[in-house]
Image (cartoon, rainbow, N blue to C red; front, side, top):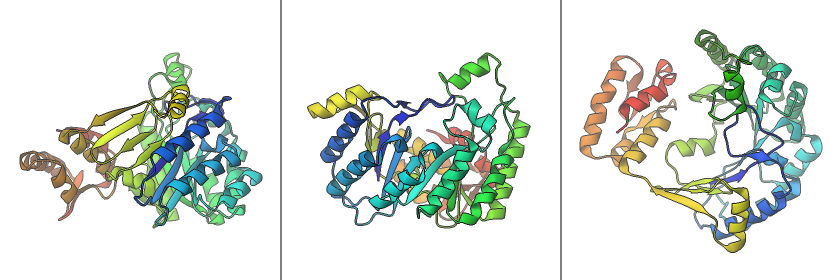
Length: 374
């Protein structure tokens, strides 16, 4: 697995707590640094998935992306490559840009951060696109020959702007006949510390929706997915059969990965490493052959807790063989005692090979996981 972090956006969304900045004048220098890090961290291990995330990777020019892709091809074994995703925002997905992406013959999956098809909600979120641009972006993707699109939407947007998730789902109904939408990620809006959204709520300019309304929106989402043949495979992710995100799914089962770019994380099976969230420092470090990063050796408890947290958010659940490989026999016995409570409450179902959350348990996955931590 290979992840490339592009930390630039047109501007900051009100809810965003990810490491990203408004696009500046050092983008070319940043791409130079990314290419240098790719050279330094090349490996003979086959790469099965590549993911360009951010930020907004499509703020890069086609030439900047093509240069990065060329370095990836030169330094990594792509003979077993299955999936290459680029995150995109609708305002960038015009025909000329998509034609350039298609000519690279590299990206086979586009993940679009639409968030809403309501102009009022988009303005409140400080998104750069309109609902019309979002709608046309999906059409443009289909016209360009891409056939694997993931859509990001949000639930539980605050009042007085909220119109509810059903409005966006109705617009998706109009786009489904194109045949390209294979995946849907639908997240509950969360309030992150230090964001503009948090400040607006504290000043009472916005009001979060009540739990009852959020539950209704979730039911609308589930009904839409069933009606249109989208399977839930993780708390917030749904797909047509066979079109789950292969890249993200491997994060959840502890597959090692390499992260390239400022603030990008890597995992080798034992240690986590992350480049510092400093674009200028990253560029200087790449020039000097010493990109600044920090590293942490995971304890058995860390590895166990991370696996429990991610696995319980998936429909597949906790693999018993994986679980046994992470902890001692005594810790495993303690876990088995604890999880009996959730089995009896019908929040978790046990099979010969897995502990899987039930539909009701999936909604409480984070709380269940926290109760099982070492």
